[in-house]
Image 1 (cartoon, helix red, strand yellow):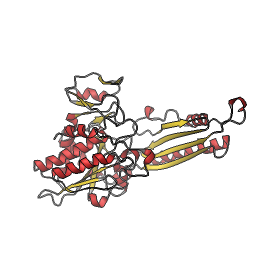
Image 2 (tube, rainbow, N blue to C red):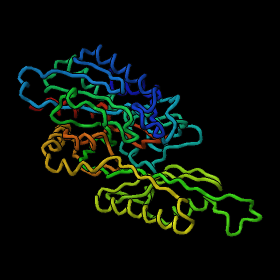
Image 3 (cartoon, helix red, strand yellow):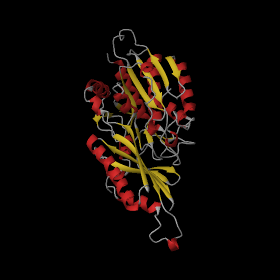
Image 4 (tube, rainbow, N blue to C red):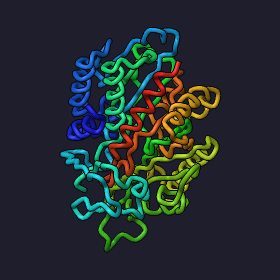
Length: 403
C-alpha cells in the first residue's frame, strides 16, 4: 500500500485531542479508534512485539537484518492526535490530480492561494491531497504514521537490509503530553526520529521552549446606571491585559528565532472572563522574560482593581531540545546523509513549535525531527503531495539501511 492511501484512510478517523481534558491520557477516547487500527495493521504486516497500552501508545518492532546486528536500534515516532485548533471531524479528503498550478478551491468559501502557500509552485504536476474546506486534513501527523508503516511494509515485503527498528505512535502530542508516558524501555531505541515536520528537506533539532498561560478575571457586576466607582468589567480588564503585551510579538508577525505570545482562546462577561495564551521562545532567557512580564501584569492588575481580580496560572510544556542535541550531532548528521542520498539538500532550521522529540530528548532519547511533505497544518488549508510522501519513505529507507 502506498503511503498516501494509508493517509486517506487514517484522516477519516477523528482523533482530535482536548486540552481541557489533559489530565487524562489520551485526552479523547476517539484516539483509541485509530490506535486499534494501527495495532491491527502492524500485526498483519508481521511486526514483532506489537502492543497497544491503555494510554493509547502503540509499539512495534522489526529485528535487524543479518549483518546489521551491531547497528544501533532506530526509533520512528509519530502522533495519533490532530490539533484542537480546527475541526477534525468528518474529514473529506480529495486528491487534486496532476496539480496544474494556481489556486486550489476547497469549498466552504476557502481557497489555498499561491500567495499564502508558495510551496504550491514547487508542486506543479504532483497529486495533492486537500480537504473540502470544512475541516483540517490531519496530515499532521497521520502522514508521519502512514510513511512509517509504509517503510515497515517495504522492509518486510522487499527484504531490504536494515538495522533494528522500533516504532511508537503516541497520543496527545498537540496538547504537549505526547511523550510523557512513552515507555522508553519497551521502545528500546538507541536514538529516534519524529516524522512531524512539513517540507521533505526539513531537518530540525531545535524547538521552542514552551508554556501555557491561563488568566481568570473576576469582575464586579452592578447595574450600569449606578456603576460609578463600583463596576469592574472583567472583559475590559482582559482587553487591558492583552494591550500590555508587545503588539508585534504574535505568531502572525514573527518568524525564525523570534518568540511570541499567542492568544488562543478568550471568553467572558462583565462578571467573569478567561484568557488563554501559549508562550514560545527558542532562547531560554527570553522565554523566562516573557513569563516574568505576564507575572508583572498580574501584579499590576491586582494593584489597580483589587487583590484577587486576576489570577494567572503558567504551566510548563516542553524545552528546546537543542540543549541536548548539540552534543548528539551524529544523530542529526545521519538524517542529513539520508536526505542527501535522495538528492535533497537538508534545510536545518528551528521548529516554530515542538515535537514529541523535545520531551524524549530530555528523557535520554536523542530525537531530531524530519518532514512529512505537508503544509498548512492545524487548519482547513492543510495539504500534502503524494509524491513528497513517497520521497520521505525513500529517505527513511536510506536512514535505516545505513550501517
